Length: 500
Ligand code: BGC
View (cartoon, rainbow, N blue to C red):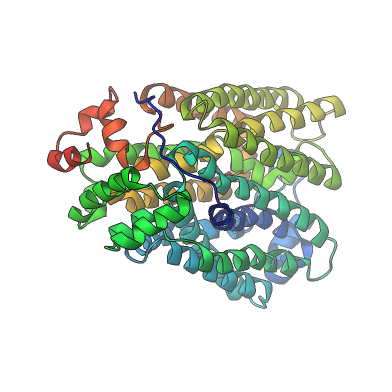
């Protein structure tokens, strides 16, 4: 397995820093949306206007702890965006290859602005739904282009850290959204409009930012602009001597140019290793149960018997833990490596989920609530869970798929990773409250079982990519791995040899 670390000369200039941060605003747009919808769909003014029947039912909610919020229509409001994003990510992959990463980011911000405007001004249900779809297309385009952009412009020794800026901004977005909802839920009758409309701010920053961003050298060379590609590389490395790295990018582009149909190439055996890893990282990420907490933390805490304000406060605490722990990952990922972070987190997440399940199973019946001490313990366990997710599967779910595909299938392959994320986010968002109602405390054991499976997956199948230049992963990682190397020699061997 590749443990050798390659470095090329680079300096972190103000311009490069600005590119990293502006692009990461794509993550803020995504995070804001994850955090905002749950709160909005719980606001009475919003329900009365668009979902009066749901509101009616909420007033006469069943007294069963585990089932008070089970409502398909309400869950659909949260989850519909992810379906739009799922479809959009494939269009975004094409745009990324043909137009470049930078214009794709611009498109993302435009859709996001349109979505924010339409949802904030919505008078009828169709406007609200169209607004969700526009948001979703924005998320699909942003989540496709931003992680790939960040991985491609980052110097190899900092690639993990730079890519994790995306996730850091996701967590900041979720946190801001929770605070916004906390305030707007008191603003009658239009608080929900403010919540949805404020999404325009990150959208606007990204829109302006995408004018300033550089295009990535790989994308420029891939589209035939060698001179501009080299100039861009010099600019983002802040040094003149970039020949060795540029050669590597050019080699990768040579190979990429021979592949006319990236999606067809992805179906070949030799593409299986990054494809399986890319998809499974995202599926597993969602099956940790993280979004059960991100979307429904206040509801979850109410299930345990917290009052309204106390549950919001607990959600804010988990939000802070989420942001703070992401920094651990930024500092650790390029030093400790991806595999160790993922495995450590599996142990921590397993203990937290299984313990929450055990406490609720024994102490929380369908009516009544947990006693104070146990409720506080559950909040601590939720924090322990969120903390480990935030320095492992959260950021690495995006990082690893963005760095493991060779250039010729990178955007197409990453689209599968993004859409798997969206599909499973949709499924969890749509199903969680019903699962909670039917499985009760056992739902936490269900997530624990997934965590066990993902740990085993990492041990046997996930190679370490720390310190490996993005454009030589095929040679240095897949061809060296005991399991995956068997997949690498069936087609176009000459093409891969060129990269050596
Ligand atoms: C996931 C989101 C999740 C967030 C939590 C992201 O990596 O894709 O689904 O809500 O992390 O911080």
